[in-house]
Amino acid sequence: MSSHPVPHLAFDFLPHRPLLVQPAPGQLSSDAGLLPLRQFDDRWDFTARFAACLDGPAAAAARAHPVLSMVRQRVFGILAGYEDCNDRAGFASRHDTLRDDPVFKLVAGRSPADDDPLASQPTLSRFENAVTPAQLLALVDLQIDTGIEQLKQKHGGALPASITLDLDATDDPAHGRQQLALFHGYYEQYQYFPLVISEPTTRHALVTWLRPGTAHASLGADDDLMRVVDALRRARPDVAIHVRADAGFGLPVMYDVCEANGLTYTLGFAANARLKRLTEGLMAAAVAEHARTGAKARLFDCFQYQCDAWPHPRTVVAKAECHAGGTNLRFVVTNLPDVATPARAGAVYDDYVQRGESEQRMDELKNGLGMDRLSCHRFAANFFRLLLHAAAYNLLNAARDHADLPEVLRVGQPCTWRARVIKVAAVVVRTARRVVVHLSGNWPWWDFYEAAGRRALDFRPSS
Image 1: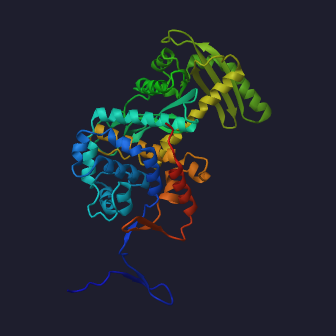
Image 2: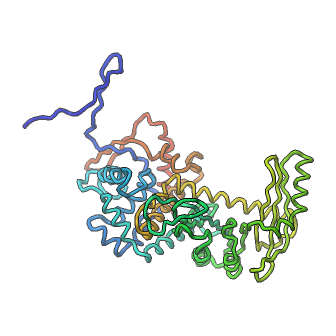
Image 3: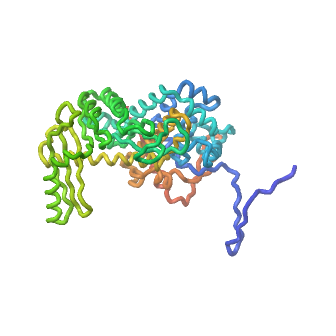
């Protein structure tokens, strides 16, 4: 039997000895930091419940590969930066090479020594395209339910007496011929226009709903909002719910649904000529104050206002601001009680401004987790992909939400978790009794890895 030499590269830049680089015979992975997140997932039973929503055609499309295994391939692949599943720009080869990765086998619930590879890129694509509308709705409901669990976890095991919901829409550029990816004149691109409803104390994305590219920002927001409200009230009937959103949602349909269902709201409202006339004095006072002090001046007022389309007057809060860069006039509409003084108006407006923090959800979903990789042809398949990305976000977000973690991980975006935890090389060894994952003894982020692992092991979900 002939022998074959081990391939290697010989570099000669060291002055005293040659430098050889060659393949190692063991099982190696570059993503061993997924293991603490997989442990957290096991404690929370998160991806298992996600997969349970997909019984039916999606399961039949799996054939030799269990649905749960493929869900974990996709969710943890997104966390590790392998966000696309389509055969374009080299992404297919990434998924196909990960089929034999020992860490991804462990994440999927397989032995790293198992000779059978994980699902291929074409199999994963068939799986995504087999999901039905009923399954998508079940996944949306699961997203809401896990958000309620996180609220309970955050507040000592029970829902708090009051909850704020932030609504926002984001452009999601499309780069192909996806169904309902349409040209939006404002953004000047072909896109989808997803709606996201989140909760600010947990930062959980309660709803991520895919919509056509030319949809109005508020399209379907009333129904999606009530889907969340109904779930919260099933968990606590007396919960007080406050709704915040920008001027894209400041329409009669949103006022009506909130008022009819006992919700308070603060919604942005676009300026018009009449409102500008009503606040001329306020703006003049802000300009005068800035001229006198040289500092930024912010003045507030509140008054009753009624558009022709409104059945009754509503409270409008006006903010007039003047600074070195110029003036800024903004309005919100609210039904909060006791908004009768400038001081109270300022407090209401400042609370409304906090809804801008929800844009962090958009940043992490789009830039951190590649939510713009909605590149299937079918709209329903892309909706499913959006929910996979939201699941990856919510899993990471829940795992990092603990005071015992180092601050850099508690506030860290996906790129920080990849740099400090996820992207670490390892040698995986399987013995008769256990699987051992060897990390480099010189790796500088071991303390972060250990903290993430302890967080996962100590996690006990609220009942």
